Each structure stands twice: as C-alpha cells, then as structure tokens.
Amino acid sequence: MPIQRLIPILLLDDNGQLVKTRKFRKRQYIGDPLVALRLFNDLGADEIIVLSIGDGVSKTSSPPWALLEDLAGEALMPLAYGGGLGGEMDALRAISIGFEKVIYSSSRLKDADDIRSAVNALGSQSVSLCINYEETMFSGRIVRCHKTGAKLGNIGGLTEVAANFGVGEIMLQNITREGERNGLDLEAVMDVSARFKGPVILSGGMRDLTELQGSLKLNISGFAGGSFFIFAGSRRGVLISYPSDSERNI
Amino acid sequence: MKVGIIDTGNCSIRSLEYAFKKLGVTTGVVSSNDSPMDFDRFVLPGVGSFDFAVESIIRRNLWDLIRHLGLIEKKPILGICLGMQLFADSSEEGDRSGLGLIKGKVLKIRPDNEIIYKVPNAGWSHIVPTASPFTDSYPPTRQSPRFYFVHSYHLVCEDQADIAMLIQLDKSYCAAVISGNIWGAQFHPEKSHNFGLEFLRIWLES
View 1 (cartoon, rainbow over the protein chains, first blue to last red):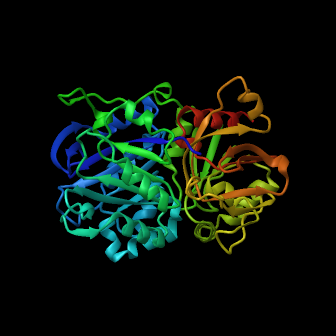
View 2: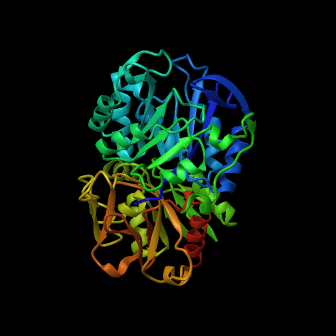
View 3: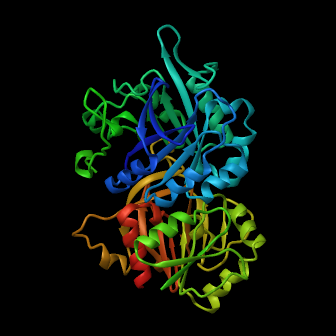
C-alpha cells in the first residue's frame, strides 16, 4: 500500500495571501504562500493542497492563475488545487501549469457537467471531490455547501454520486473541527473508505503526532490539515513545521 | 546538456523545468514539429487519459516526430506517468494506438480487494529496483527511495527484461522501464523531492 499521505493545506484569500480559518470562519493572516511552499519543499511534504477561498461568499471568483503558476513552478511535491474551477478548460489549465489534481466541492454535484468534463479530459486519478460536512447534535453528519450553508445530503449519498461521476479521490473536510485541533473524525473517514474504491483523505481537527502515529495502520489514504502544520503552541503562533520520516515511522 | 520537454498540451512543463534547473540542466519546450530541435535528450510528460493525450499529440504534429526521435535517431527519451504509458502499443483506457516505442500494453489496475488497495493508486510508494543502473544506485543496504505515483493503469511489458523498477501494491507492477534509449517512469520524479532529482540525475548520466 502507498505510504499514508500527510498534506498541508494552503488557503488563499482574494488577495492571494495565505490565511487560516477556524470552522470555515475567523480568518487569520499567515503570510506569503510562496514562502510557505518553499518551506514545505525543504521539509519534504508529501503533497500540498491549495484552496482558493476568495471572500468566502462569492460564487464566481476565478482561480488566481498567476499565483498558482508561481507556486507550481517551485514545487518539488505534488499539488492539488480547488476553488472557482470551471470545467475541462480550467482543469487542463491547472494541470498544464503544474498541478497534479483538481478539487471540486460537493456543492458542484448538483450541476456536475464541469466535473464530468474534467474527469473525461484528465482521467479520474486527477479529479478529487471535497465533501464539506458538519457534525450536528441530532442529525449526525450533514454535508453542506461551504458558501451558502445549504444542506446537500449525507456523506454516504454523496460518496455514491461521486463514484458514479468517476471522481478518483474523496477529501472529507470536517467543518466543525476545522482549525480546532481537537481530534480527527476517524469514524467518518473509515466509513467512506470502506465504500469508495479510490483514495479517501480526511481534513479537520488534526491534533498531534501521536494521533497520526495511531492511525498509521488504518485504511486511510491520508490526512490533510492547516493549523497542525502552520501553528505552534496553544497561542497559535505562526511556525511552519512538518514531521520527519522517523517521527512518522515511514 | 540540453533537455527538450515535449509539450503535449495536457502535462506539466514548469515542474519539470524547475527540477532540471535544480540539477543545473538547461531545458526547452518542443510544442510542435517545427520547434527548434537542438536537444540531447527528451522528456515526454503526461497527465490525463490515454486517448485525449494521443489526440493532442497528433493535433500538434508531434506523433511522427516522437517516433522518429525514439526509433530512428535513437535519442534518449524519458516518458513520465502517462508519457510512459503512451510508449506502449495500446491501452485498455482508450481505443487509440500508442507510440509503439516499448513492446507492451497498458491495463487497468484491478486489485482483488479494492477497498484495501485503492485505485487510482495515489501517493508515495517505495520501489524495488530490478535492473541496472537502479540496482547499483539503490543497493539493498540502503533504504529504497520513494516516489509519488498517481495512476489507475499500469504498463505490462512484453519483454520482462525491460522492467527496471517495481512497485508493490496487491502484487508487483511495473514502476519504471528501460528499453535501450527509451526510459519510462510511472511515478513523477519531478514531484518526488530529492528521490526524484536523483532519478533524473541517473537518467541524465546514462
């Protein structure tokens, strides 16, 4: 089996600055994404996910192509990009400037022509679906549109739809735990991993190295996160880090 | 030393340029059959689906050029990911013929247990070197290098001697090939940190 991936997420705002959110809100400015990428290059990160989150409400912001090209031009690791992507042409453009994968949000499944055309042009291995979900007290895990908050269904149902569209990878993103470092929702990712044939990665809540080491033998393709790699200490001081091979037991 | 990167339209050029730059090697882009051809070696990168890439190569008038470089001029050519698969005679992923630079066919990865062994195979894997120069470069006393893979199909060589590296999933699959001047890597050396740079250095010195 491939080595379990450990993936820093770089969130870009409208100005191309690196930011970090908590529960998809409360933004904190971090710095220059290119500097962060160079540090992750040096630290040997497995992969980087770049997500353009715009102002968080606009539905039409297009990908920041010039910045993406700069990032891809210096990356010695695989890159995935999500945010404001159209169909085949945008997907091909992302690949041609140096990204390995494109990521579409689960809110795009309602009108999935773009996802279908991207899969057709790139092959399923280069197209991921990000399922953003919340944990609720009474209704369990609910998938929501990350911008409007509209309820989209449950994780199992959307996993099935994603599989039918030929998406190659699923990224589960837990909104409730995002940025909180209060532990990973392993139950959710194990459930999806048992249903979906492609790789499944989990984002949201990554606490510490001990938690990752304890999950090493589980059937989970990888973990993605932001705070874990960007902050140090309880006061959330910015300090980019990445575990060594020996710390990860690989 | 100057390396020509063949731009099929659906591949990453900049990442390769950056990787070769780190190795101190000059690169240029070959985007059609009338591009300048003052290169010592060529790389055929590729991401995407087989037929889509074949059609793109034909549309850019690169098909005959690549075959000529590989079969007649015997220039060293390195295929990366889909680029390696395009060297084969055919692929189960599409109806189009491959370039026919390596005898073999490309088949879908079909593990018995698809829940444990995920397809596409996406991520970092250690490899097993099976032929020179990799058996010399990566002796058993050293930890085998790891590379980044993202693929749903694998190359099956007609001549087993062409296989230069294996990747172990549910069973062994071809990870790299060497057939004379034609080299292929199923993984992305340009996205595999120092392990990948070392692989490119070995190819440049071959």
